[in-house]
View 1 (cartoon, rainbow, N blue to C red):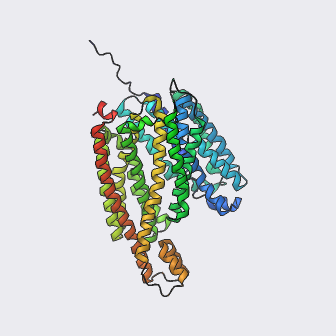
View 2 (cartoon, rainbow, N blue to C red; view 1 turned 135 degrees about the vertical axis):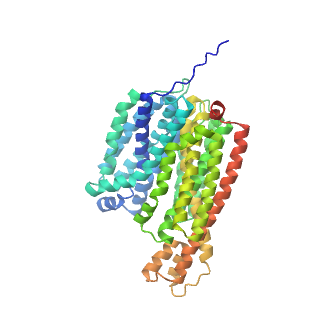
View 3 (cartoon, one colour; view 1 turned 45 degrees about the horizontal axis):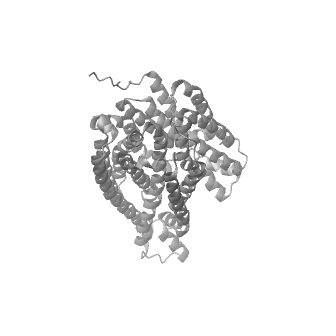
Length: 512
């Protein structure tokens, strides 16, 4: 009997142009997470926000994105991923205009919240549409790499574009640049992008939506404040409340015929293993790079501009690797790519521990580049495995789970690893003599390196012995954190190897 199974159709010009449109939309979504960094002084001067309002202006976009990812991914599976993306693009443009025209801090907070809700449609919709566009595995892997590059570049170019615009225009211009991109997406989307939705999906369960928000938002809120203030008991209740709602959310999903998240996805070994690797990969990279940025400035004495310039080379490694990671995956297959990437990541993290301990600038840069070489193929390949392991009718929800996992991973990495380093710093500084300082200043200097630098500047003791000890204590905390991270990454690789051996990924069985 002749095998009549049709081979996947290679992508043509229409599909690659569609990928370009999706990637630009993803870049804008990512860029809005960081575009306000340089605009804050102008916003403060114009709108005069309170300290609480200023915090919400900064954070509300990310909170809303994290909170609504699951809902928007599932909604795309139900009513159409392209339709949800088009609605989200229109809402993103309108919210951008409202943000640009805000005359009070409250208006800007509301506009940023609406931007976040609209932005939550973009990441899962664009990723699931990439999977729809590219049927050939090798092409899909490359396309996900390009999509991931756009996502990463958004965070890098956000402050740069914001700085250029602020040099010549009102701060609202950082939002107005979203309008032509969203308009182009609305025009080009129906022409270039396929529509896909589940044929038998029912209406979305609104109680599940509410429970998902009650789960995600408090946890992200608590973790971000732990990252900002260090570990304090007052930040634990939101995390605990969110976890309790999470248990209720999971129980409700088990009772629904058509749940917001189909928990059977987590019974697919390659899906769960890839999700965990992805989450913890982001966890360690975000935490380590937070330390790295502080290390360059507070230990090595670089200005923010100098630190940014020294970080260009490792950033280029991340960018180039994002564009070329598909070659590694197609050459070695997804499992070997993930396991090998984790090993390289662990070696880079060990080198970072050495760099921190010896306070070596060049070792830090080399370690950062090596981490990028390992991390990028891991995160892009596991993203493809997460979406590819799910049934086609659930790829929108799978994409949203992947993005939500990355949000949690980044927030936890900054909070937990930052807290671990802080504990080591305080232990190391506990018995350091500071007889020349007032008790309040000594307590501040023993709490954080930032506090020690502020005290030293205020009392004009930039060469004090205790300040040298403070820098060494911070470097020791950084080094020990990296050592713990390297050991955990190796254990994660062993766990992933075991799971992949028992349940090979779909891509692995169909490709190499």
